[in-house]
Image 1 (cartoon, rainbow, N blue to C red):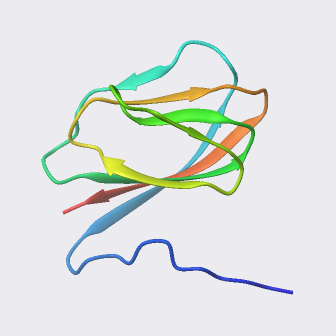
Image 2: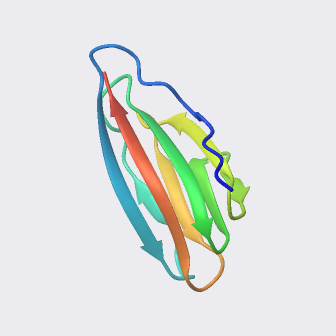
Image 3: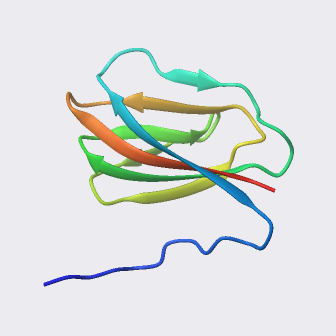
Amino acid sequence: DYTATLLAACPPHVRRDVYRVTAEPGPRRESAPHLPGVVEHLVLAAGRAMAGVAGEPVELFPGDYLAYPGDVPHVFQALEPGTHAVLISEHP
């Protein structure tokens, strides 16, 4: 059995950087705003995390997908040991 689901199509003339994130519970990682128009896409593979815009993070569970503006302060915090995610940073 195999299923492929498109989560976000890439707009024309956009660069995407793909990151594998591994994190353990502890203080949240706070990221400063990136260049205007940057969007981050996050898929949680294992564990549990809080992520997204700094003032409004969302709790994520395995398999959850979140897209949020990367050009504002944003955060990532692992809530369980062995948290893994894939992060895609989309640059216009």
